[in-house]
Length: 429
Image (cartoon, rainbow, N blue to C red; front, top):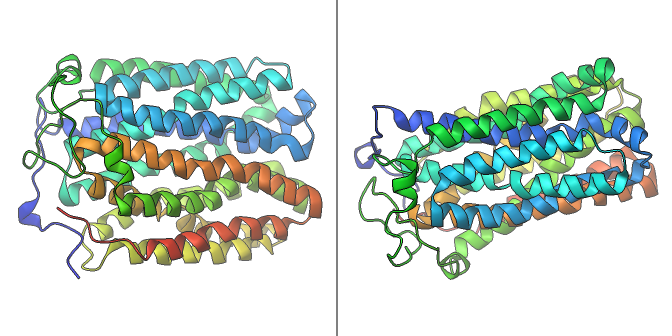
């Protein structure tokens, strides 16, 4: 089997306007992804309070998350296409700015119906940051550095969960749930402005220059490059090239079932521990924070390993997903707070550390020219799992009043994802 990764000698990283500027691009992309992840994660600890304030039944709380993810799925696709067409700078900065405004607005709603609409609108802009960040990484990084950059980028999702679960329960106790939405929404608005000022679409170009470069050039095919470190042409992408790529299609389905487990847990873990087991809300938030902190630490390690394995990365991802499924079944059987704390790090590792591998495989299969569209389109399919699972788990819990039945529903996703990783082919460099 051919190696999945390039050798150290073949790695060529583009140089930016200043030495090391690519790392600033990574920080900006990561910060935007962090804020949208944090904004999304606020719902978990805030859900019981929002439900009580707006008069929403427990079984219907998942509909709020589903509304968010409906918008999120759409924006992933559109954000990916826009990132390839116009460049990632405007997409990254503009989307986080508008999503932040939506968060502030949600913190001031007083009706369930309007809350559903605002959640969908927040998701409609928040989802674009993933594709724009992936596009930025594909342009500014390559080889082993790209694997590490992707793993660092994806720590944003787990760190957002950590911050939300450490901060939001305390904010709710002292100031109410609305303040948390207003606070994080305001931070997102400021960050959007900073990104629009500092981000660059491509090495050696201003944002405006890179966005308008080669507007009349033909679309770049999957995997096509003009040389190591070459700037992609910002043209309207040929999405048929994504649909023709067997490996990308397999990754799309595998990621759907992967995120079924991850975001299903994030959405429902607090409520299931509080309502189903009787855990104090602050302790429940601490358990989920510990779950996510483990991923923040382990994702860069997995990225480092991923860049240096001699075997196909799919086997590493499949093993982690199998562990994830098993740990969800274990977690669903627990009733003691101490055991929740013990199990949380193991579950956190398994629930997140397949992610940098899958994300790096997308960039490897797609090539720089279609990296934004491929990442956005595939993540849109992935997020359909996030759309369906909150309502599905709510229905299971409402029908059975069983925490274990809910976690069994979650565990089915990563088990299927592990099996689906196995048919993937080698990445062509």
